[in-house]
Length: 110
Image (spheres, rainbow, N blue to C red):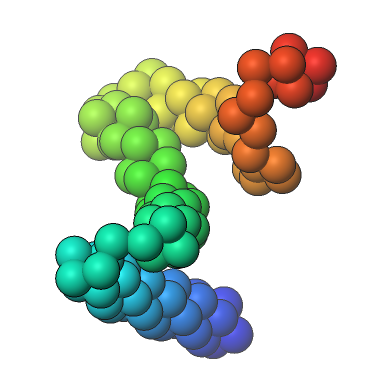
């Protein structure tokens, strides 16, 4: 029961954050269309970055499941292949990006 309630709460918080970001992006877009400013553009980019980070996790999960789903409902060898693909994709996943760097010199140093 605790796992289900945790999952439900996490999904609810994620949906609320998604809805908040969408409404803020729409509001910033409206304001920017009336009065274009650099601050409005910077805020829009910041909100878009937050939205992209929020939705990336969902896309990664969908891709991870899509790769092995076609083998899961077959014979025993296919099921084993599905589990192997799931382990392989989990080992290649980047769990968290700490710093976003866009300068070429810093990218080469990392």
